[in-house]
Image (tube, rainbow, N blue to C red; front, side):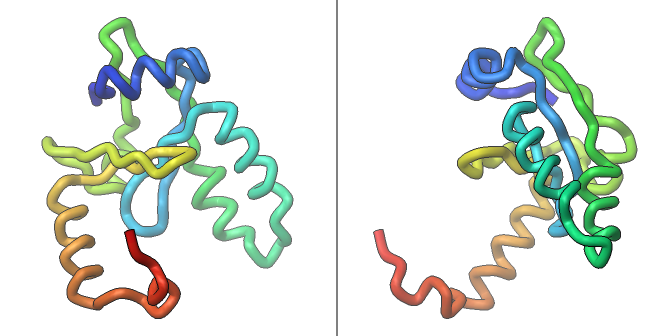
Length: 127
């Protein structure tokens, strides 16, 4: 997957292009700059035994990758399959990390969210 230049340049400055990918339970991949992932990894590793299955999802599927000379990353076949990634993918900035979505799955997810209306937790939100 080719990383857009504006994100690639920032990631090269922030973490020398070292990133970590892992599964997200909503059907996408999480894409972390390695230093940010290390903070999350430590928190996840400290979860109680009752959360062991979730530790396996996040930690057991984590994969360290680096940019190649053309600014691309290689997503393992296991992670591509888990997220249902096909030809068209979307990279969404989420503040401290990115999400990688299959474009069709993201469109479906967004349509479902809009059809469900705003959750009560966002009742006071406005721009």
